[in-house]
Image 1 (cartoon, rainbow, N blue to C red):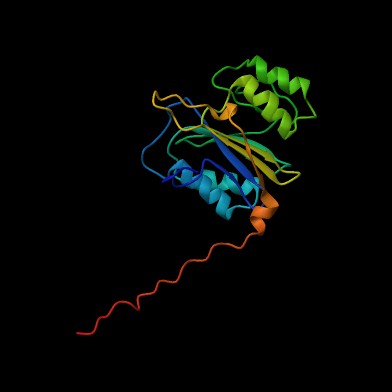
Image 2: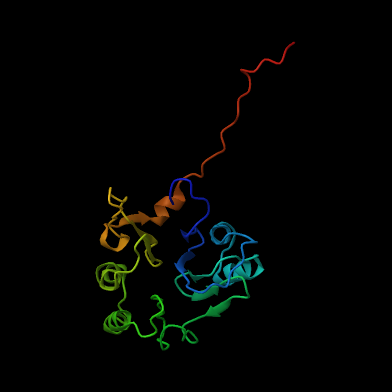
Length: 208
């Protein structure tokens, strides 16, 4: 999250479900509706399955165009999200960016034949662990200039990276070149939820 930011662009819930977003170049959008970041936040707050997340997306009054990735460690779907009815893809039918590959999908700009992703996906097929993504896939493709999230569902760990603040000339170190923060999700979800502070108005005196 960023200061003043409302909603979510990445999330992992206590239901072991993750969601993330990627820019979509299409201009199929409406300014009237529920912001995408609010839809993603609601998915994390209220849904417990990939199908439930997809249902929430369909039922929402959608606005801008983007790609959403939703998974729970066993099932993963990519949603081509926009104002019109969204398209849902899984491993078998995802041919928008590359030929189908069992249990592997990727999005990279508008390049249908991204050789870097195909190279790494083939090289590490069956062994695509978080370390491989962080050390090979992501910097090899220089993808994720602002924000990166890697979910390890088996071990309930999330890795997050952000771009650096911009310097005086406006240059920032992209997220893919920055260190990652490792978050133990089991530990995070075991914390007590924050309680709303009781408001004390006893200092006010309404006697006339």
